[in-house]
Structures are given as structure tokens and as C-alpha cells.
Image (tube, rainbow, N blue to C red; front, side, top):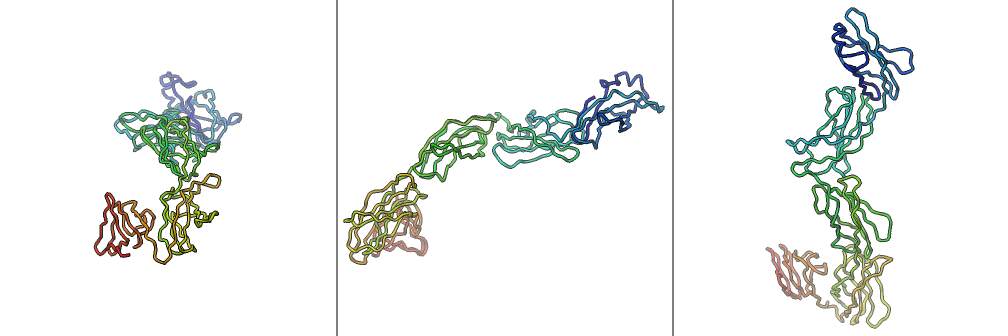
Length: 455
């Protein structure tokens, strides 16, 4: 007598192998085409008449209490109103709404390569339904689908195709029971599936890890393997890892990740592992150190009797700077801190006086700062600004500060070096004291635009 029980009912089956029912029943009792069933809680004294059935070989009890032990029995009922002897009682125990055993992957449909089939052992015909959920490994949201109703069968293999998955991307699938009472079980353990014809998906562990393009606050990490991945990194000589999951899918392929918000001049180590297989190990450890470079190409521009604009090429756009300056015959430096731009204007200077200055990259409170060389300028005696030089650093518009090395638009006091293609926009004027063309340098003047070389 096969039994499939859930938290509010049970289905029983009888046949040629059941107690008191042999293959001779049909011959010996041709008029016994009905059955009577009874059930009760084990320990109770009174049987409950459940049903009188005709030509059936299974029956579902409903409305039972969960987590209780029951027994049941069955007998023949004849056409003349007489009955046979009840069978020996058989027992079953209702349960809470429990998940099916762990699912597994069935055969692929090779006529539809995007449809793997998930299989599990379950009970159909008891009012229990099954819900599947699946997601690409390493991603957060689940997609759910309810398995189609299947023919009544006790403890059989049930299945559900998962359609339209992209090729060669590993998915994890879980199954849960939705019992006749409406209660839902926990989800089962996961099984991994992947669609795709041709070569099957192969999970390759991470390898060939390296780093490049390291700056003061960023670094690019690179490796090969089958995704998705879990990457972890930490500051050198510390124990706490920062962890991120990277949804990089497909067959074995190169992958990269940009680390940001790092500290300048600081060691870091990192590892990565593939999540396409359970318990995949991490790669070997790779090490790198962020940089902290000194500013370069410092210039004193627009020098006047009591002021001068100092500019430099930024070592890293995210860093801060300190400016040191003094009269050339003095010993102590004047210090200006927390400068966020690659330029600064000194004011309150003395006319016709030589000044020294240097710019320093701030590499962090606990780290050694990196300083550029000492440079000299002299304030003028009159209000006429000293001619300065400025060069292009990229193709662009004349009136775009980003086109120029000092991140400012040239004036009539600047000797301009053109090494790129610079466009004077319509209606605009490009001012300069003089223009020197380098290799590849060109000035394009739009309609209504002009270039002025007047001092």
C-alpha cells in the first residue's frame, strides 16, 4: 500500500500486491467492484468511514491534521450488499509542508538548446504543487515558475523545463512544495543548470591573475576563468577582506575589475574565485602598491607686481596638494594646504622681487609626501603681465580649458604652442601673444570666429 502524505492529507494506493488483495480478486470476486475505506488517529477507538469507491485503485484523504499518525483499512463491497473482511491496518504520518528532495538535471532537449529540464522526486495527485525559482549564479533576483500539473502518481519523478535561458550561463535552481492547505515549504538545495548546444558549459577555475594601470587611488585587476566571480581585496598587513560578486558570464574568458577609492602609496593584496561551481577555491594572492607621484611641469603664469598664478600638471585628479613659497632670500616656507586644483594664485607679493616655490602631493596623513622641484619667478615692476607659455594637451575647442596644459584658456599674454587640432568656435576669438606650431598642430577657425595676436 503506497502512501504519499503532506501536512493536511494523504494518498493511498492498493492493488494486486496489497494485503488481502491478490490477482485472484478479479476472478474470485467478480461482483466485488466497490471498496470501503476507514481511517482514524492511531490510538483512537472509533474508525471514520471515509468513502465507498468504485473501480479505483487509490484514494486521497483530506482535511487531516499535520504531524499526526493515522491508520487506515479497506474491504470489498459486493453487489448484494454484503462486505468482505477489512484489510490489516496500514499507517502513515502527515507532515508539515516539506520541500522535495534535492532536484537534479534531467536530459536536455537537443531540439531546443535553451531548455534544460529540472527533475525531482515528489507526490502528484495529492493537491501538492511545486514552485521552481532560478537565477544566474552570483545575481540577486530570482525568477519563479510553477510546475505544470502532472498525472497522479505517488513518489515519482516530476519535472519542469526552464525555457529561454541564454547559452553557457550557469543558473542555480531550487524547488519548494505548495501543499493543499496553501502552506509553502522552504526551498530545496540548489542544482546548477546551463543551456546551450555544441560544447557543454565547462567551469574553469580562475588563473592568470595580474594588475595594471595602478594610480594613487585606483587599479585594474585582470584574470581568466568561467564566471560569475567573487573578488576580495584588502589593505596590506590587515585581516579584513572587502568582497564583491561580479556577474561575468560565459565560457572561459578574460575579466577585469576597477578598484577605486584606494589610499595613495599603500600596498594591497587580492584574490578571485569562480562561482560557477560550489566551493570553488580562491586564486593565488596578487600584490600591488598604489603610487603617489610628485606634480610636474610647474609654471608661474600671469606674473604681475603683487601677484602670480602658479600652475602644474596634476599627479592624480583625486589628490590634494600643498604649496610652499617664500622670498628667495628667506629661510622659512609659507605653506598653503588642501589645494584641490592644479593651480593657485599668490597675492600680496612685493614688486620686483624673486620668489621660490614648490608644490607637494599630499599622500595621506601617515605617509611621506612627494614634492616637486623648487622653481623661481620674479614679480614685475609695472602692471604689464609677463609673457608666459601654454601648450595644447589634446584636440578640442580653443575656449575649452581642458584643451590646454594649464587648464585655462590662453590670453594675449601667452605664447601658445599648438601640437593638436584646435577649433575656434563660431563667433569666438582665440587670443594669444604668438603661436608656435608643433608636429600635427593645426588651428581651425569656424565661421565668424577669429584668432587675435594683439598684445
